[in-house]
Amino acid sequence: MRLRRLKDLLASRLMLSATVFSALLVVLIAIGLFLKAKPILSIQPLSTLLFSSSWHPLNGEFGLFPFIMGTLWVTVVAMIIAIPLCLLTSIYLAEYAPNRVRGVVKPTIDLLAGIPSVVYGLFGLLLIVPLTKSIAPIFGITTNGYNVLSGGIVLAMMVFPVIISISEEIIETVPYGMREASLALGATKWQATKLVVTRGALPGIIAAIILGFARAFGETMAVLMVVGNVAKAPSSVFDPAYPLPALIANNYGEMMSVPQYGSALLFAALVLLVVVFLFSVGARLILVRVEKRYQVG
Amino acid sequence: MDKRMLEEKFFQVLMMASTFIVVGSLFALFLVVVLKGAPALSLSMITQTPKGGYYLGKEGGVLNAIVGSLCLGIGATVLALIIALPVALFLQKDYIGGSRFATVTRLSLDVLWGVPSIVYGAFGFIIMVYLGIRASLLGGIIVLTLLELPIMVRALDEVVRRVPQELKDESYAMGATRLETTIKIVCRQILPGAVTAVLLAFGRGIGDAASILFTTGYTDRLPHSLLDPVASLPLAVFFQLGTPFPEVQQRAYASAVILLVIVLLLSIISRLLVRKFTKYVIR
Image (cartoon, rainbow over all chains, first blue to last red; front, side, top):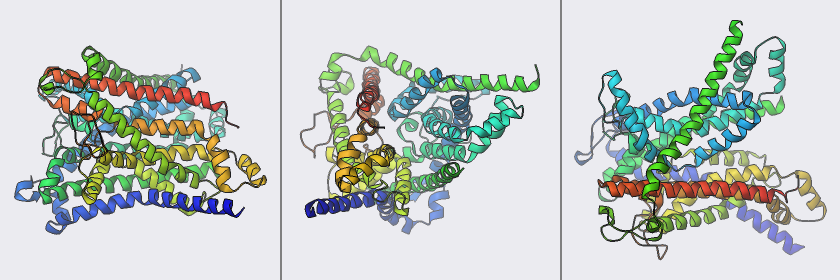
């Protein structure tokens, strides 16, 4: 008996340490990046790093503003494309679709989540880049196709599964009685959906969108392959952009050679981490509250 | 027909169109990548390593990248499972489930799930410099383990939570300890879900490029030890696309098809296995 107790105790200690490690991993990553980014922070003030447009690493100027703007442009374009499509799709799947359709569409969307980002990038290169190139002249603009819009379209595809799977699940948690009450008052199915279901599911849907945003914000390879990578803040969707993750990926070689440069790149990684951290925590807190509300009710 | 019904119809059409676009984009992706890649696909692509002048369009294949990716993926998945399984089991009600610690752990893992892979790459790079390892198979495995960890824990946690409490209580009533119950009852019960979790994480690990960009290096040779640099499929696609030669770019398309096929097979296998294992689960 003693031996079994001992084993039990020993195992739970091991499990505890694995759990503490996993829980602290995100903090470890933040500390690691911060320590390495510190040299650049001690040379230049935070505001210069974030809001200066001059990126001349060899002269010791590390303004990340063009890259931050590049990231924001691409991400926002992606979200503008993805949000309406995802919401309509998730409402359709949760409320309207016959079981047969759901049975096909849901696994397909899961599959979309598993496709490697270089494959998305390749698809962007082969189809989306020529597409935006041929669309641009309609607006009187010439572009080689490597621009914010191409990046946004590819990214939108990549966040489909994130937003759809979460918001569909949330919509399904809205109690059936609420729908029935609305239908009984003579509402059409769409009215019930619009006025009751989506309103009930709104916090959860917002959380899903935030998570999609966070995912898009840090996506690297696929975007890198189609946005053109020109270090200047874009001013239209047909301008090329140079997002933060692409900056890190393209210049990692310099991390070894020029210490300041490396430090600036790791600072860029820290910025990504902080933004994603804030967004994810916010979204998860909303989701936890949503879960609680419907468990009680 | 009144306005309300018109609105109803209008939105129904809009919703179906959206669903069609979402699903259609996936099919477009498959179609484009496979149509472009299939012509360049040949037996030598998957059985040979790059020969001299390969990147100028000469003989060879991407066996180095296929083997490299499998080594990276398997190594990282095994390591991640070793860490993730105890964590998921520890999050049970019988241990810390329901406590504030459990909530914080879950939140932290969710945040970790959203951390961009390039950030893992940068962090992995720092660790490697700290430990003094060069870009190598080991470095790649470490980074991918961290990347897969949150995916695996959260997937396992979901299935562990679904094990009925009565089942565990019966085991306790027989005098079993928590550890014995966990190993003999819970682990048996979660098997189908665990298979999905493992394959999900494996698929994620094998397809990720940004995290291993700094940490694995790239080589035309097959890896012989953990400290050798290693090639990988995602980076093979990326680097071959970067060359100016159409023949080599063709091979990038073919490499992408190989990667896509591996990921798809994993997904299909996991579905089949789940069906097979689910027979033995008590509900």
